[in-house]
Image (cartoon, rainbow, N blue to C red):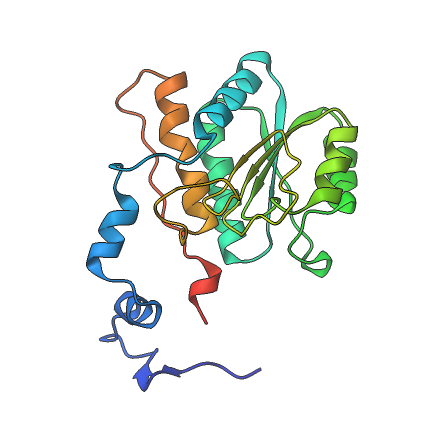
Length: 216
């Protein structure tokens, strides 16, 4: 297997190479852009509040949540972030290990695996995928599960069939920054859930996740 040692004539093994700076250069990310995507001075994602309420209800009623991430770097970052954050907030939560051989979409086979491993699961939370996974979502809903989708990919007609979908690229979305990664979408739920569920200023969660699509 070959190893990538240089990018644009920059050595990846040289300790003086600014890897993040190189990433920003290749992606066209300015300091202003990075500041803007972290800003809260714009409208929040559509249905973010509704999803936080659904999560709060799951916690209050003791429903088990299973997180189903995509298999790439963004998906795994999202899944781990969601699992860590919800666990810290007292949720009954499990993390499904995706099978890359099935592709990026959530499939009925994924749902069958989750149901077999955690038969008491009642809520499905996707990360970095699910907005167009109609067959997988249908399988989950057939089991009576609440289906919550967090994604950052373009929603295709006729649209998501999940109970609640949060996605900057939803058909009806007007969110200012459509280029955020799936982990960023999932991360936005954490402070809202914290404020809603626990009135404790000492509790915080910070995470950094790299979008797998950035390393191209």
